[in-house]
Length: 156
Image (cartoon, rainbow, N blue to C red):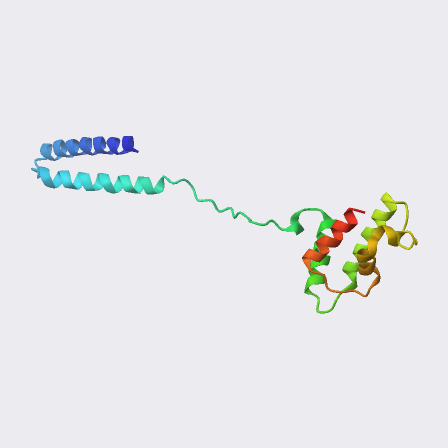
């Protein structure tokens, strides 16, 4: 930064000498003090303008703090998020989330234990809490409860 201002001072001195010589050759009889103030003022203003314009180009790109799940490209994830949002915003308890949890539970039981949800041995594997959720009438679940039940399903 100091080098910039030294170059500007040197440029101002060169401009002063140039104007002094030019005005003397034209028999304009320049006043040295007024000419020095004029050149110093113009040099300072030009330096400040160049400093203000030297910040680079503005960025018009907006950074999204929390990217949308809908833009992820995974249609299953988008459906699940929509299902949970619909469950939380519905006025009455919705059975769609409970039914989807039942399908996930059935898939896990078939893959890991070789039994279906309708099998009598499934109740022992599922435990009373998950069995109650899947067989009882639908009820509104909070995010923490949904997370808890999904954790239980994952650990089957």
